[in-house]
Length: 340
Image 1 (cartoon, rainbow, N blue to C red):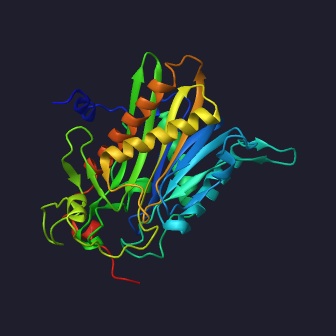
Image 2: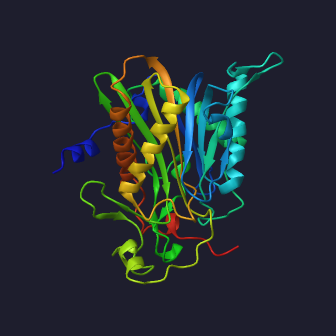
């Protein structure tokens, strides 16, 4: 067994990073939802977008050199572009509790967000709304208040509720994706990741290379095929609409970093995606990773070590996203809806 395989049995997750809390909320009538990383006191943040079809909000302000230095939450949402409405609910929660950027006339909460496309499952008219975002904040605070009582939920919850992976040969041959989390701690410095995996590609074990979830031989088969291998052998993929797949996530650390350093951390996180998803960063994916620093300590092992930790945490979180997902044979929860 690879030494890092042991981490699968551990409860490490992004909430091991001091200064943040995480909450999930789901819509009741469809497999979709929102996950919020809440940092009410503010955290420095950056972003790196590698997918060609992203759905995002408030990412330009995260560019090094731009004015705003702190965010108060990051929202990961289902529902495609419609799901960005959930971030409005996160803003409402923050405003109601007195958090935000003081502008003189009002406190303005800063809530970057990214969405994934999960409209294939059930009624596409049902997607995360402002109330869903507000509820995710409430769930985050409840989890913080009961810290140590239970681990962070993973799999088909929050932004991972309706995720699918392995859609290269059609959504009817896909498997459930989900949301996963992991963290790495070295001498007091923690780097954690929260990843919602809805990739067009397959998901692999990052150390052993074997398939964990992805395209299946037929719609009623339990046998997976290696989509990447089939593509290289000349098999044509099914037509895929740009933006109907995406892996989105948050990398967080307790050590103090500035925007340029956090941008490098987000970039390194994409290496973790590349270790687990094949193919990744395609024209049909909107892969987006945020990175934030809760600035709880000044001690740091240096950027080389931090980027390695980010790579590792993302790879583990992506693997956990599919390992915690619902069985793909459960037709009531995974079968794609008829075309609208």
